[in-house]
Amino acid sequence: MKILIKFLATIRMITGESSIELLCTPHDTAGTVIQKLIEKFGKRLKQAIMNGTNLKSGIKMIINGRDIDYLNGLDTQLDDGDVIVIIPPIAGG
Image: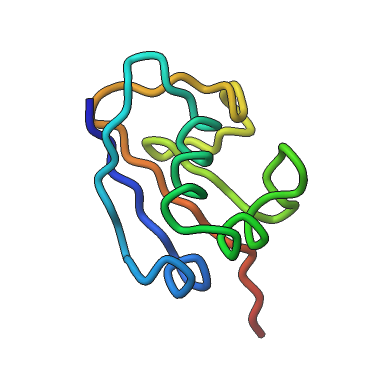
């Protein structure tokens, strides 16, 4: 199955991509996708988004328009065609 992952702001700068398609298995979760992304993009991405085994405070992972905080967190199951957006903390004034 394929999912689309979109990267915003500083995450886009780290990956050098605005979006990618990722092949997943039917039992993959949001956490599995994070691990696959870290394998693909390396330590810099891990440092930017992870705090141990959790997303850093302020990092948002949105699946089909819904924040994983209101789903099953990193254990949220994925389906073919899902769209994930990874959003770093945004500041402004």
